[in-house]
Image (tube, rainbow, N blue to C red):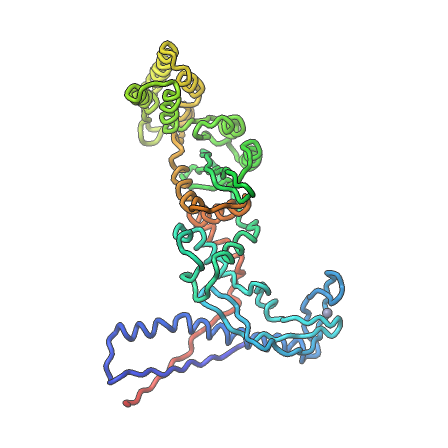
Length: 455
Ligand SMILES: [Zn+2]
């Protein structure tokens, strides 16, 4: 069908004087207003056309609906009668304001069900009467850091005022199952895992743990392999393994903060397991503190550890590193391991049992990134810092004073944040698909005419 819309406006310039800012200030107001008026007109004409086919033509139009009185049976009648309109124009919440449209009813000639064809035709959900564009903006706003501080409602994102509780309900009320996480066809070279706490929304309070598994591809691209709230590492491990098992090669490295459960549940998803060297230093200091060691001595031993585990790999492509340089790295690695074992011995002799145990537990995983490089030439993360920065950003959004979360709710909000922030092209694709935009409607501007007279 074709609809013609003419636009006419009156402009008054007082005393014949105006500056450019005043003109632009006024013109700017019409951006959203014009969008709204044009969309309302199109919807009204479209509604008339659909209802006319349903009620005025011989062939009618099949609009599937639930049969009146029949428990979820579908009626496929094609003939209808008009049943008037709702007395008040109803609002459809769009991302730039509210559209006001007179929504008309029809009655099925066969079963008698009364319904509004336009909301079905437009694929608007009948209860919330919100567009997908608005849901997208709300999801993006909720995942922004500033969201937590803006009180009351989400006004800044559109002309419509949405109470914060409503916005939250929209987001958490959906299952977001099509917003996929995981490898999605990419080969993952290394995997980073860690978690952070949150306050659970249960009677009497309680602390939950939200856990992240992030993959890094050969090209250094990030992929969110999963986000889980209050799930143990064993179950997480099963899910991640299933996803990674389909790869051509096992990932080279799993890097973690060294938490015991992680190594046991996820250790075999990669060929090597690296303990984050930053956590190693921090946790050794803590273990020595428990041994009652003075700060000065603690600092100097952590400094020594730092020298042992901090050895650097040569830059550049592995295949261009000369064999004798690789041999040199091998020798240095052996001497670092010797130094590490000497440190354990020294601690044992001094009776620093917690410190000694801590070092013993980590010796097999602290040089893994060097061993992997020597074997296959892959540079892998030796700290979890990439993930720490993601976790810090998530924390700013989820750890507001007084904020409590359901397990499902925090999972969804964090998933949206990670998609939007780290896989933004996927986020765009998701919405394009969800909105079903396929050039169904084209608007061409035909003409704008104007004339002026002096007043
Ligand atoms: Zn019917």
